[in-house]
Image (tube, rainbow, N blue to C red):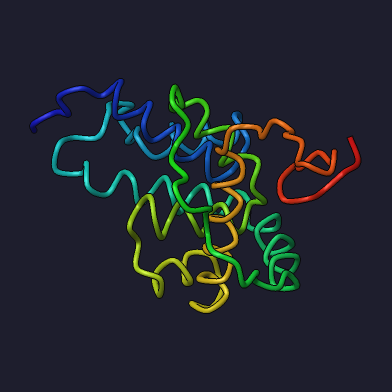
Length: 178
C-alpha cells in the first residue's frame, strides 16, 4: 500500500480546515485525528487522500451542528446590503498572511463562515454545501454573500480619520465633528 508523501503537512492542512469550520481547537484536533487514522493507527494511504478532506468536513460540521443551526437562524434575519462587496480599488492589505486570513474568517459567525469556506475556499457546489450545512441553497448563498462582505471588512486595513474642509472627521463614511 502506497503511503502519503508528506503526512504531517496533510494533517496540518486538515486540522486548519477543521479549525476554521468549528472555531474550536480541541474539537478540530479530535476530528482530524479521527479522520486521518485508521484502525492500525497509520496515516491514510495515498488512495484515500481525496476522501480525507471530505471526512474532516463532515465530522467538523457534525461536531458543531447545534451552533450551526442557531447561527443559521441569526443569519436568516440579516437583510443583504445593496452596496457593492468592496470599495473600488480595494485589495488585500500588504503583509496579510495566513494567520490574518484565519483571524478574519474566525471573526465571522459560524454558519456564514462555513458557507464561505465550503462554497468558495473548498469549491463545494452550492447544493452540496446546503446538504452538508442542513440548509437550503438559497440560505447558503445568502450566508456566503454576507460572509464575503464581512471578510472584506475584516481584512481591510483600519481607516485613519481624515478631516474634510468643514472640520469633520470622516471615518468609514460617517462624519463626526473633529
